[in-house]
Image (cartoon, rainbow, N blue to C red; front, side, top):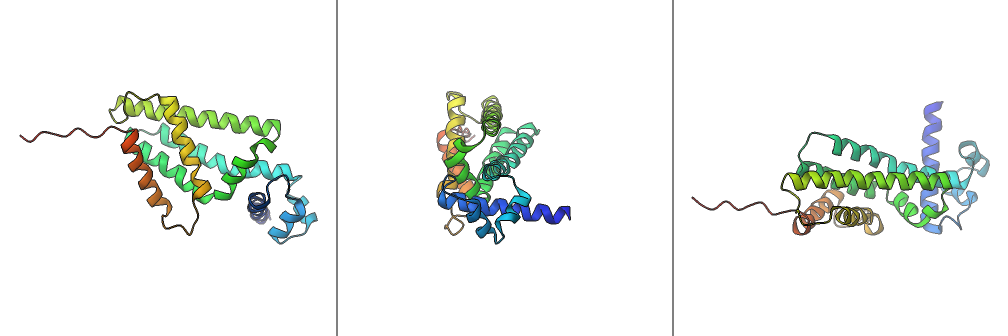
Length: 201
């Protein structure tokens, strides 16, 4: 029974994300969400208490897996290069998979409750701290250019990765793995030092 309820709740959250993306949070109604999910409005109330709770669940489901993944990457014993590859791949995959959730988050985060907004802002600060730690490791290992301002670089990098959700579409010619490769090429041109060329003996 519990498993079935969780499945139906997830379907409802996904339906809400699609409706909020199309109509905007302010104009969307629980009737719209019920219709999108193919259930009655009273059924919606069996699973969530309000439209705002659906919004907060969307935000949680977009950010929590990302937070856990980033913590695992940064806390690993891998080199900075492998960590950065994994960090970019995680962001790209997440933005593609939860595209509607990201768009709702970017458009309607101001509609969160005070507690929900504080939780989101705390999460965003933690992501930035983790990324700064990663780039500082890169500087120490000679991978990342030492002349960059790390907090600025982190804000630019994370903003760019988050924005993927704005323009990516599953029917695009580039798939997430290919987008990851393109991001890494850009980073090699802007952020990462080129490997030293060994003179022929």
